[in-house]
Amino acid sequence: MPIKCPVAPLEFIFLMDEYLTQRGIRSRTKLTLMTPLSGAFTKPICNEMLTGVLAAKGVNVVPDAPLAEVADKHVACPDGKTVPYDLLVTIPPHEGSELIDDAGLGDGLGFGLTDKQTLKSKKAERVFLLGDNTNVPTSKAGSVAHFQAEVAVHNLLREMAGKEAQPLADGHANCFIETGLGKAILVDFNYDIQPVPGKFPLPVVGPMTLLAETWLNHLGKLAFKPIYWNVLLPGRPIPLVGSRMSTLGKQMGVLAAHAPH
Image (tube, rainbow, N blue to C red; front, side, top):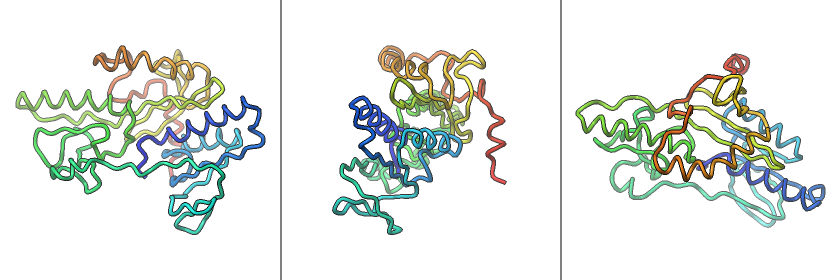
């Protein structure tokens, strides 16, 4: 930790499962996902769902397992737990930029001290941060940076006009999780609201289904590449998907059932 995008290792192991299945050797292969998190994802409802999908595919999930040492054919954790391997794929530490710390803007790890709602630097005037540069409590995935960019531009223009920056950033993240064999899961969440089931972007109609493995979500994943190049990079807004997360179509009542007692 921190992991740039917690979904990436999940997609890797889902696609490995697909590859081995298509090769006809999945039954002779053991796949294990080690994570320093309490499960497959950072949010409880999505964690429960994704951990279930991994289990159904025969993937062994080892939670609360930060990496302490890689020894001869096994990985050791700080608590003494060990996991054997034949092929290890591990994620190196994700670090920020020395430039940010050298400029006096950082938190000591190379990430800028950032107001999570305005995206303004806490250490300097007229400096806004987004994506890999921030220390806000959300992932550093592309969708997050895209939504942050809209807020950063809005607030920079306000300050240039002599107005105060507005607290518009809510940590909105939107992500297709490719699960292999022609299916994917879609999650949509922010700082305060974790992923829940529902329809996206429109209630009832969808056409995407949140927190469920579907073929249509897989098509959405494939469609993202042309959308990225032809819509996002030229700076055009995505229809029905704004920088602030909408609760339309989401089964918000699910949150009450998972609330701590």
